[in-house]
Image 1 (cartoon, rainbow, N blue to C red):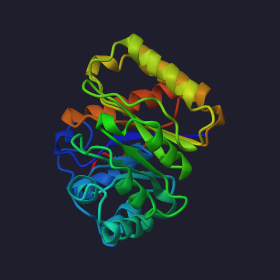
Image 2: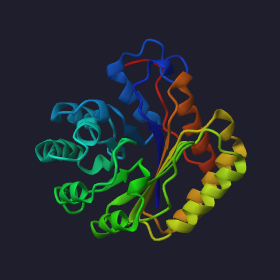
Image 3: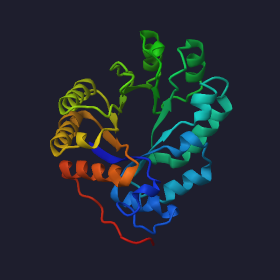
Length: 277
């Protein structure tokens, strides 16, 4: 079993001085980041449709043992809302394949105003090639029903189990892998322990498990991180890979919390140079 720990996004000027050297140019951020962590959830692909040159650069700037999880472009999820976007989807998937074995999951994060439309979903799922590792984060309650879950399950596509202050997805594992996004910044230690237990109980048969965190700072206590380290070690004995992402743009806190988890896991961290090359 392999554990991949990183952050959601990496290209944050706010991290200069706390994680990145003060004068590190933006072009050197990913190589520097990849010295410390083994995975990243890319937000850039949500805002801009990437090209092969960009992804080839990401691949070149990271070591062989590195994984990039991509957010699908908002032109597919928010503007087209999965409809009449076959050419764009095919292009995005073709470009994503530039990463080869470094490609992790693809997250299709739908807008909260997009209501259930099974005809649109069926047509879109039919465009996805067999074997693609993708998760769907539906954020309108109308999507939370057995018909939707059955369609995802039939194609071995994951329902993204998301939890926030305003909306919670049922825990339905619809694929041989699982994707969780925990975004309620008011979690108590007891709530985090409960989530750890729920993930352990529901993913025993999964090959890969992705977990995204966006918590208040006090949520990352040593005890809480030890609990998650225990979860990763115990729960994932039957998993091939576990991916953990921390979402904090401000003041280098994402890298800080990722490093604390690595310490709790007892994982060796690569040595970083302090200055740009």
